[in-house]
Image (cartoon, rainbow, N blue to C red; front, top):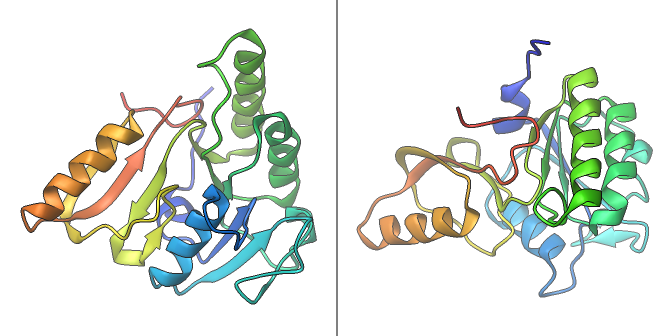
Length: 198
């Protein structure tokens, strides 16, 4: 079945929810929301975490379905065992795009493969553009959108890159920066459950 995905919401979202956001240093959820805030993203940022009322001073919601406004892009950085339920909630919220940074899916065994297949099914049925799971995030420098799992603000440039391996991609970005270059867009595609490099 051919499905049309909204890549504008993926690369130029008006709003981003970070599910697993925290201001506790050293956590991936901290890296992602820090990159958004301090990287200059100008859209709405919605931290989602039932354990916090505020993250970096921003009102934080227990679940994505509690966010009172539309969410274009959701970033998931929570343990794998919770991802499927949270992704169902993203579909209920009518999120248009999702980046699943969390690992623990088809790369680890049969149970992970089944969870990933269910994510694919939900994404196809609801038209959700999904990067990942098991990825390092994406960058669109023209939109000041940086949702990498590492604390890094890539240099801006005119090159775009998709790398299945996030580590290789990050290393190439670092090497390019040393030579004075930068990137327009970067995608760490991970397990490619929905969006694929073909």
